[in-house]
Length: 175
Image: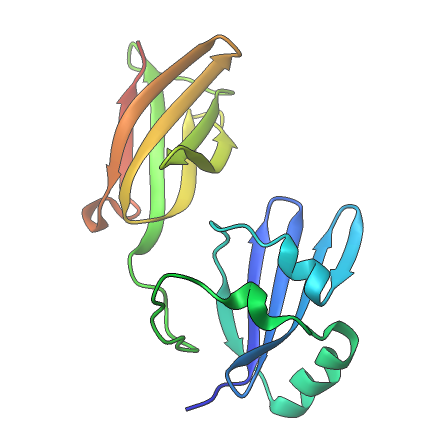
């Protein structure tokens, strides 16, 4: 079955769009604070960790949009890994919201910079609120939580995000 639609990735200050017609990538747009890029140039700036959500659209709409952002060099989509078929309208499995409460001596720690790292790359960051809480949308798996107090003062904790932690607060006591 061939699907028509758009895959959208919303990142920090940027949005990527890939347009599919009959199941094939035919158009792309990147919008950020510096402007927009279309077609092949937009594909160059897709990062390996970008997560896309797929939306089904009517083919005539997709065709009109592709006219302004056509991808001519499809070799950008060749990958050496095997990929599962794309399913439109299906909720991503293994994704949830991780909620972490930062405390020092049992007292909430607001205003701390918190970063989530997986396989050496930062995949999310936030600043703890007045209650010392941060939350992140993550795939289930193993991560490192980095608490950045200053450039030279960073605490690192191993963290396994599993389905049982979905929407449940994890209390993290700081040294």
